[in-house]
Image (cartoon, rainbow, N blue to C red; front, side, top):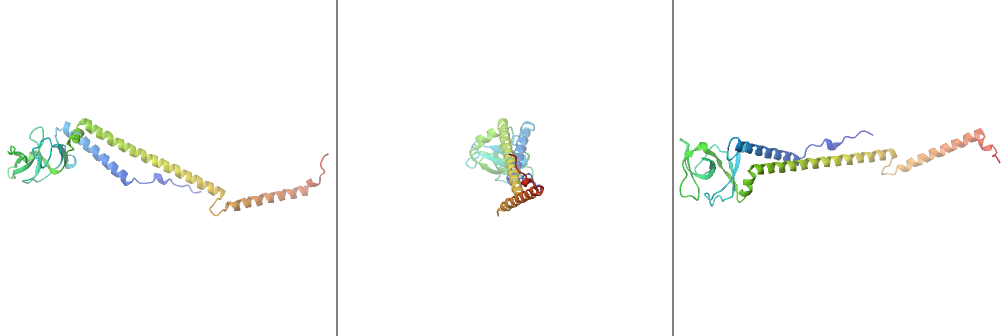
Length: 235
């Protein structure tokens, strides 16, 4: 029989596996980027791939942004009055709305929607980005995720899921290979015994019986020729 190729070893990665690999790489990149940005560059809002996230700690932007909301910020090349922006003038970043903008001098004035007075003016170089969207009331969890233990936990969880996915893929491939080997063995046995769906094994048995009868007849002729059947038996 011609040797069969194990197709399970030739299968291309599935779409789900490719998406999982890309997701794992993105998570690892973002976590490493965040660690370097925080502890090497001392940046309060790391911006991997041009996006950053932070938690609203005060009610200065109520009712637009609630306390413990997570805000996602994107880098921008142009700002306008009315944009909600994140800027940093000290250790903690602030998210307020632009109320004045002098593009010639690059001076920006912001104010919280719930505040009665504007903030101190600052230059556009301190702007981190503008608000893309916000997610209410998940800031407590997000603050933990942004800590070193939280980042380590995320990395461990992602690698665990990736490892389990790879193991499951290997087990599926091994099971498929074993099933293929069993199918090949069955086909080999069917070929050797000529067992087919049309009952051709009966023809094989008939041929074997004919060969046996032919051999018996040949033996009888040889015994008769040699006179072995005519010799008297000993008393």
